[in-house]
Image: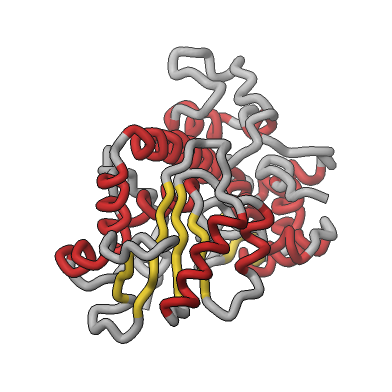
Length: 310
């Protein structure tokens, strides 16, 4: 089955807490076992790759249950059902979700003050139905989804702007990126080497490290979207590497590579990396090439160590 949303996880979390004090780390495994989640589902990460989806959703289920007064925290990393929580379980609810919690004054006050989705500070909290059950993602998932949407638009914008500039600009962009990634030493050294080769199928060569212990040959092609680089172009590049006695190469394009081109480089004695448009844009974003920070949002969490008494 798929990983349940955080509202669906509220009842299992409260049920486990109703059986006695629990540790968050144990509850994650117990719920995963109950739901018969696969290893892949248990290890699925948020888009940022910094936390498992299941752990994040259980964290938010526990957070909202605590704000509703149904859970308490008797110790660091531990939680248990309160009297109110046990009373709710005694009613044998089929499901606990935000709409259920909105019946509790303590949670209504919290949720209204937090500006939760589906509520209004001007609305009558007692009659508000609360957010729709369709809102199944945690706040962190919503943030990461929004970031993904912004970056998807940014990737498209970057590739469009690259396509409108000159080949010389594209060459300089590759220099900036490779230097930002730690190749080529200084901008001067990298610019002096890239674009100088003139060998058929190779646009330039750049040091792999500042000491020049090894070198990487580069080919760059500005292709329009939908015009994939095929095997013949990649094969010509590899042929040039062989002629130069080179063992490493990077083929960069603003479009994509055909399946035949990608399959061709899998079995070469040389190490050849195919860098397509989306990957190029991702690296530009990661290393700050052609982009600037518009806004920085810090997401803070409770520091358990701070509140741990000696």
